[in-house]
Length: 411
Ligand SMILES: Cc1ncc(COP(=O)(O)O)c(C=O)c1O
Ligand SMILES: [Zn+2]
Image 1 (spheres, rainbow, N blue to C red):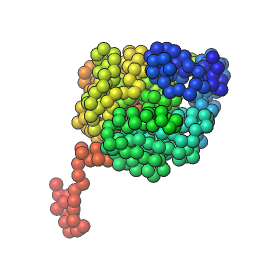
Image 2: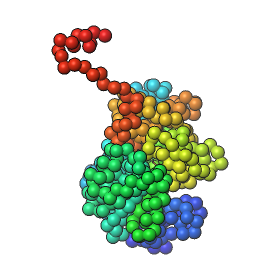
Image 3: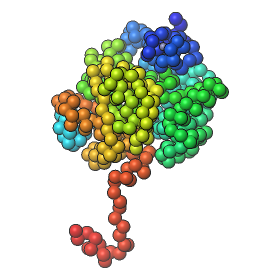
Image 4: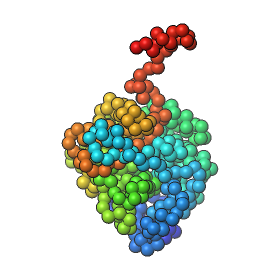
């Protein structure tokens, strides 16, 4: 099999039936069964040409420091993607009775969400294959990320969002020049419409859990976590889950590092979903198969009826010996305040759902309190102000009168 021009990649393999496909084959999903595809690498040659020591001499702090594990030739020099902070949050840890809890703050990415990791690799693949228009369906973040990085690269973008997408995300799309289609329906409707348009017009499609290159970018977070921890591996990684592409990417990142000998063990994964949007957790707790749900939740980024990378997500959690947990919306909203006030980090509802899920799993006695836990914070609180205002309270309205200050502050 040829490698589609890349010496580090051996090809694509279906996560469902295992059939192999050449990287040069311009398909998104398996030709035999329609399953999602996964990129495979020439592990031996990567091992020979790259080491933790050579990596430590690379001054690049971004996702591109791990270039041997990406299936692309292009890179994006600016804005800087990845290299996000990982830091201990002792007060939050204490509030849950955990010995060690760290936040990986991916709201620090250029478009203020984790999605830039995925978009970077997908857009570079578009560039490598000579495409200058990229389309995608998005709950908001994948789209805004595509608009931001597309603008940086001079690639035209066209994004399908559900009509109810939060205003800040739509504002980002418009500001960065995407052609924005607000679909009068759910995220799943936008997704299917975008696929139909791709079929009809032959555009390059970045849809999460469809384009195999998004997972390849998402895995970079695991590379960073291990390197930031001095190549030790956390015991548990907590991931907010919608389509299941972040969590399957997180797992692939750890697996890739394990295969090339950079780490010697793998973590457990905790998949967190909103109660009304829990198809993957239902599958984990039930027959292992994805069944559609209503998708209703305040956490718009993880509001999904039929997760598009559900099978790979279930495989990842099971392979890790991990678990899934569902959280009601009021606990997700409360987590915005818990994380803001307990750690000084502002997350959107989906972004802090990880904390709500961790809290529940701890209360259920399913987490080892002595282990090291990393929770992903996947999107900024500024992305969805309306949700936080439901729980944050109101400012006190006061007169502009110094004489009355005593009255105001007496109590
Ligand atoms: C902030 C945020 N968190 C979590 C997710 C869930 O990722 P996935 O759909 O790959 O499971 C998303 C996806 O849009 C997101 O934007
Ligand atoms: Zn297949």
